[in-house]
Image (cartoon, rainbow, N blue to C red; front, side, top):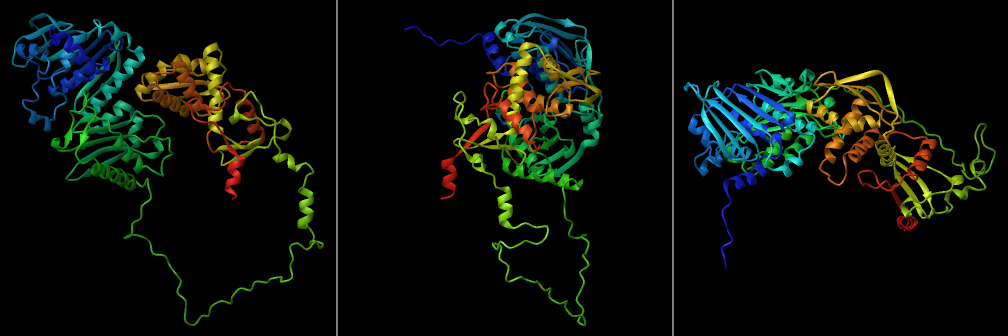
Length: 602
């Protein structure tokens, strides 16, 4: 039998490795920007064409490379960062595996121009699909210029799965933000289709945060600064009143490397407990310094998932640090026992006597069931009972006809005997044939609005309420790109937008008949819901937008409804195609059966 095991050609092996490292244009931006930082650059320019599908160019003034190093840098596992396995436990640089350039060259057309300071001429290398086509001397400034063109040109299936330009550019800006926040001492600029997106000058961390997210954030930041033998924690957290419903301003760094860490996010959220609504997300820009030997950055191809040696202890330190910062700025109440004002308690004088005991007069002959003539202006118990009693009061608890067209969870009641009870501004209760029906008012309204919005998106018909005074507000650039990405669907639902610049959004109109009158809050809820639903491949973009819009526009919990509003909500809900579940699949209706009620009284 012939041997079947064969070594893969380098070009194929590189394409397989590229599948892990290079997922989209943003991956190239990340890898090449990190290389520029590691090269000691003080000025890094990023030029993007067609959201990176046509061109990603990174120009830096770093150390540059010799001709030999430039050629060797495109080989797999060629690196200047480590020389032994022991070096993996003392990593301070961004990259170290030597996979990025080989992976990029395997799936794109790459051109590198680089020169070291001491050299008179530089080196030009052109590689297409892992094949070196040109290597020759050239004239170029000190540093390196990488041009990556036509990403995935040789893998059409991969290119086909790239998203829209707005989506891909949003991912690029996300990666850009992570790196520029970690290096405020470096000048960065970002251009897309010849338009400037960012131009960030060197400065301190607070200045860099303001440069990335807008000047208004400068007033929202609270300093956090804690040093322990285990970890050093510095940076900024946001004031509670500035917390938003969308993610986008939450950043963890360890040794100046961005990391994703849901466990530490919970520590921050725990520190804000009881001072933020459940759906609000605080901003934070937290930088940790730890012994490189106590962390493992080599557990994921993108090096963003990092394992700590003692995560539980760091969790406690982080939560305490955030709470201390909030308390120091009088955001949460604190008690100073040393400076607590003394309360003046009067001392009883020996010459003064105690006041007389109060006398309570009791009518020992009072009989509440005595049907005697009541006092003027009052009625006896029996008279009030007779007045309130109705001959047909039993109808409140009578059985109602069941609508066979709707399942048991959506039993209807007769028009003549409807009685609705509102509980805590959250649930609507009414009797049905089998017991008590409970309706979640927010989810019910979400279902109603969802079906209305999906009809609007399908028919192209919407009703917009034009605002007399348009609202303009500053947004995270990535959120603004997401608005542009789903703008067509939002306009079909009734929104009207203008874009004064790359940071601000103006809302000129919003959908009519919604339960939320705050356009800023609506936009934030829509974007966050849409982000969460993007991972769900079972629904299309229009359904995701409709679901997000329904969540943003629905009646909030805590809103008191009149009898007429409850009745209208009830009727409209059961006119829906799927009244039993919200757009997110959560139950809208539940029944407490007579049997369950009987058990409670045993």
